[in-house]
Amino acid sequence: MGRWGDGEMGQKNINNTYTPQAINHILNRKLKTKNSIDRPIWINQGDAFVAALPSPETRFTYGIDFNLPAIGNQWHSWSPETESFAEFIAPARTFALAHQIDQLREAGLIKGGSLDNALVCNESGWLNPPLRFENEPVRHKLLDLVGDLSLLGSFPQAHYLAYKASHKLHIQLAQKISELSLSKTNFRS
Image (tube, rainbow, N blue to C red; front, side):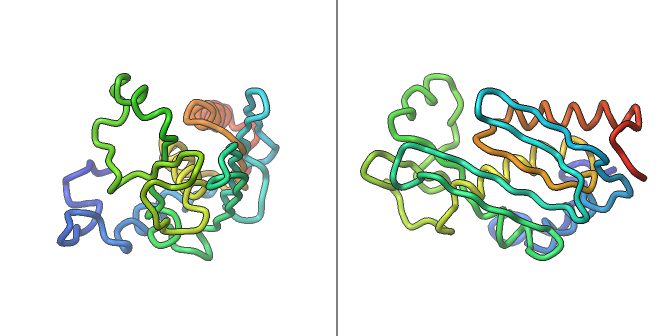
């Protein structure tokens, strides 16, 4: 396995970002696995959850629900077999609520954040439209899930389903999948 910067990850374009072909190549390697989830795995906290369910294909479905009209309740489902990650998921920017910006800055969590690379929302709408997708916030949450599950090295075939989840819940799911794969429980080869 290569390291970032050793050339394995593909060619960068003029903006010093990876090309869509390189991004898809990296992700496709992670998706090619002979393991699949055998039984449902659920991680939840209150009404938030993330799950890996047996499925004939790898699919990611995410839902969010915010009490702001600009975001509201959004769902998105993505199958890497039918849609390009680089085109339909990777462009989705992170987002923040305007009333949380100062608190996030004080905690040192948004040092590189700006209105150019993140969406900011308040009660009256987006402070920096236009959105890249009508449901860009939920696509970014799906992007977070894919990124967190990448810690596994490869994705067991499953339908990954999340609602109002967090990085913490995503990581707990990755840990559970890792534990189960080591014991070979809940997996088919």
